[in-house]
Image 1: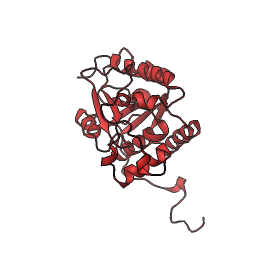
Image 2: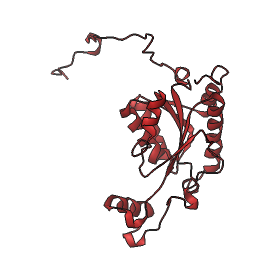
Image 3: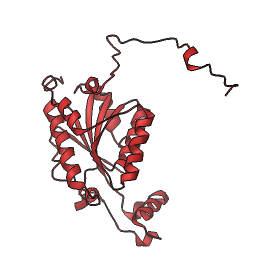
Image 4: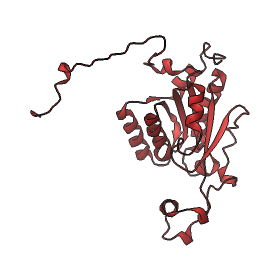
Length: 237
């Protein structure tokens, strides 16, 4: 483009460069991010009624549990999310439309109630077993940050990054990651501990997250090893 107002990259001059100093360390690697003073773990929608829809639920649960146990060993704060739908009577136009699309029905009268608070399918998978010093937050949205205290809680702890595991990658985890970026958090996606039902949609979600470039994508083996590192345990004050 000959008429572009932007000079070629090699000729651009950027002023105001900020180097690392005592108050502004910029993490450059996954190892840099793995500090329980500044990183938390978010476990997304590992619920009975969600997992029962996935072909590889058992494997996803096992890998998510491995990350949770590693985070506990390293002293990291952990937040569990649960999705709930409102009763049909309380759904508005959007809620009814989305429920009809997801259930494949043609009218609100055909909708079945699902994932209501305190229903059997609403419960977290028994393997999760949140502890007394871990939070459980409920939501009605895809982003874990919309309508929940997750963002304020992380900021109050001084958290600047979070790792995420759970289900479903292509439906709720991707929107959570993108929302987090706009809020100024650094997401770490533990890809093999994130499940879903549509493999091609999951691949597209991961590709989009990678292309945007603000997140870190890792796997259970590498991440759990960093969380369990001997220098991590008990370092949160």
